[in-house]
View 1 (cartoon, rainbow, N blue to C red):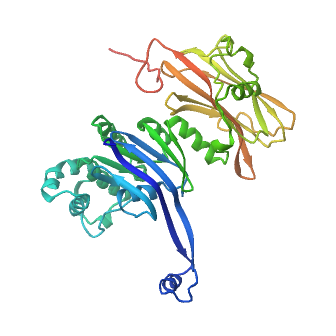
View 2 (view 1 turned 60 degrees about the vertical axis):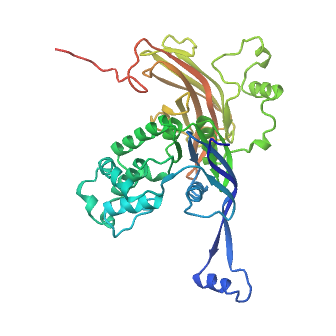
View 3 (view 1 turned 120 degrees about the horizontal axis):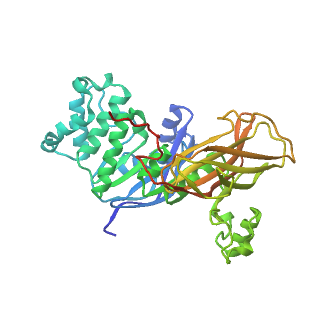
Length: 432
């Protein structure tokens, strides 16, 4: 298709690992014809299609293959097998210092980087002032790169990458090194690029940025693509991977079959027979994502307003309470009860737990039931939000999820005054 910017087909990357350098030489010379290496499969048959104008995020744990696939797309690495096609001029910001000559000064490295991407000296001359203004590292631009701090590296590298008018921008985790003001400037450039219809591939552990800027997200784990889809969906799945609770879709069966949906609703105490009659609580999500060891189970959850009335609509500025009932199947040392509120794109806006609040630091016994309430003032802007709940803890220093309910309830904030951003600072304004 003409609108495909990047196409990756069944790409595999295998590294040969040797115990000592002499083993590599002996194997190369076929001495003894003995295999002297072990294989590490960094990518295991990954497929990926990115269309022009998309901003695609790639997420995953350390060692999942994120940086490897970016290096293969940019040509820094060659795949062991598979095919990669790129339609457009790429500018890449990979790991810190990549593409820099440590003995060159900043100006010389600008020309070096620009030439490597495919620009002529004349084209770089025309962009030089913009690059220097964006990098804003002052007279350090005339000093050797080996004297730069990590922040200066990122500033100069990103300034080159984004100001030479690429058709495809690829950014690895490097942006996390810059200060908050520079990061804000970079993300503003992302928005400009998106508005211009350019393609962005973005790897980051900052899930809020992934949710905010990406149209689609790809989740990698141990060299395998677990899935791709909307940012919220993939971020929720990634969180399952992080705590070892991910279940491959193949073993879940046909989740969307009506009888399976009704079974899940019954397990949550929702009467499925009322589904077609429209009597089910509309605020509850019948297909919410849940997982955990079930040593503790959230059996009931709802919201009340300041008068104690159950509701899913909260007036901005008023008090409201989140309720959850938890049953213990086993003894748990210091369970942690938590809630998170996200916007519809999946960005976590706020939340807390009993550990943060130092509200409950006791053990519970099997068979006990705990009723937890979180009461606070609603200062979020008007709109729709999603409430997630969880019970977690630590077992011999290992973080453990007993039960999590993602996007369990929808919450509507009713407001006659919305300010800038996610929540209201409730400023007291005086004009004299």
